[in-house]
Image (tube, rainbow, N blue to C red; front, side):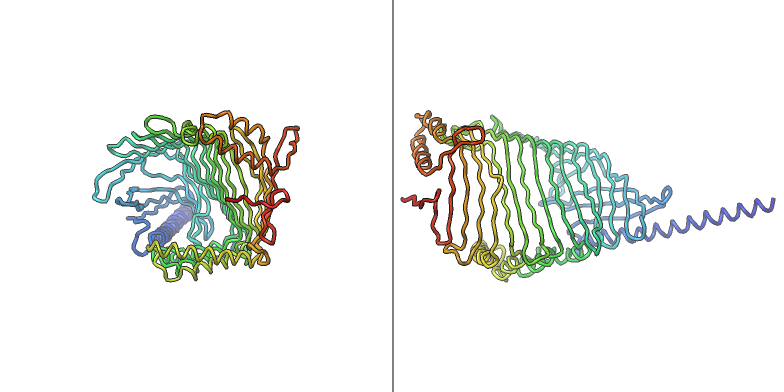
Length: 482
């Protein structure tokens, strides 16, 4: 019997020791979370504010965390009171902290600066999980889904609703203090409605891919960056921006949306089948970088286009359009440095000074591009209008030996201009038709006629700017005249 009592006593001591250890860990986690919140809030708590933080041992290795009276600032209003936010926290080694079972209030009240209720925000949270790094002090991974979100303004009837609003972040250790991060934010559907009109958009998505970012060094500059922005002094902000950019190897972002429709109180303004915009930069940690951007849309319909542009002009308005632009050998650090020198000590609230500085920056940047022999490439250019279709591509080189500072060419292929002229001419009751036909006839006289892959007639234009500053169209000098 004594043997069993001794075993029981050992087990009791072990349980008590584990309990004490978890209590100590809970206290340490509480201090850690309070430190992260204080850092996020800033010295004057302009970013966020918060009340009591509690951390209690939970099941297994998890801990239950609550943050009371958490608020975030809103423009021209009282800070938004999130109330009590809770989640489960599980330490993963000495640095990573995993969170799950995120819980936030389902209804929030928005108040103006006088404390009067002006609206509500209602949401249904499906899940919220992720992790942060203790040493870096940043969210490293996140997966949050709000099934429904509705914001309503008191009295006006204006409201915003969104379905399946998601936010995701994934970080991968690339070694040597560098991280690769991918972030996505999207909504299956967004609708804004009110007495003055409505807008709906489907399948919204914003993505970012950051490669080789020195996260610890980047995070260490955040406080100084915020101070520099608040100072509104370019000579303080731009040098910091240069440092932060140099901590990133590459960045790519994209915004896309599906069907979009907008209307006022009486009729539809426009609809759009899809829209996309992207940008990218590679080699940001080097003296010269590669930049890219792209724009595309499809299915644009404007019911009142004929009234605005005239029946003839509406024939040439693109319903579909796309372009990609690339720039090689862009001296990004030099460009930021030139901007800092041009704007140093300038009052950002002085519109006249800002405009003057912008012109100086543009001139200095042009010279920097010329010195770096920056190359520009236009690819995947497409357009489609009721009366015409076309493709275009081109390239240019910033060249100090060129008379205009650059040389390049642009290739444009349009569908049969004879057919386009016939369609425009059919709108004889449109006063602008004759003028448009005149321009099209001039273009036809310059074109190199040919056929596409299906044998349909095309008009080709190769526009060239040579090193001597001469503009050529299909090898012939172009002098548009008065």
